[in-house]
Image 1 (cartoon, rainbow, N blue to C red):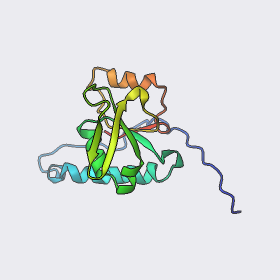
Image 2: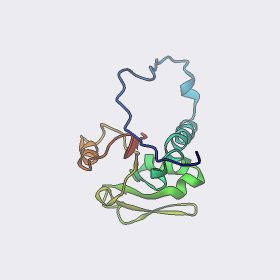
Image 3: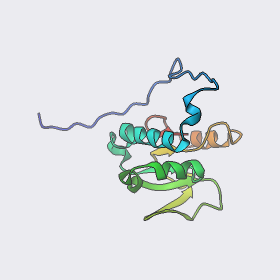
Length: 150
């Protein structure tokens, strides 16, 4: 009683079946739902389930200083924004600079210099396997060291 014990955060097991099956039709409501609204809801869900629930996520890195990473940052709560230690990327034009948004100034570092945990904001399958190889090279564990957001 009154004793707080650390919680072990094991990686989530792979899914055996899809969580959601999407069926396209011309009258689908998703065509009328703004991308920014979906982003805000997804970001809030990640903040509640991961950032607020796990002490090891008190500071974290956003992997991807492009549009998706910046949009994720902008959609976060103020508390979430303060927790971002850095963005990481592979683009030499971005590395060494800062992402500036309102009062926030977040450094952009090479992914090899970044510290986990990570929120990955890079789409899979768009880099010819380079992004996936970079993540694998760090020996990260999904659900523990990183969550893939995009």
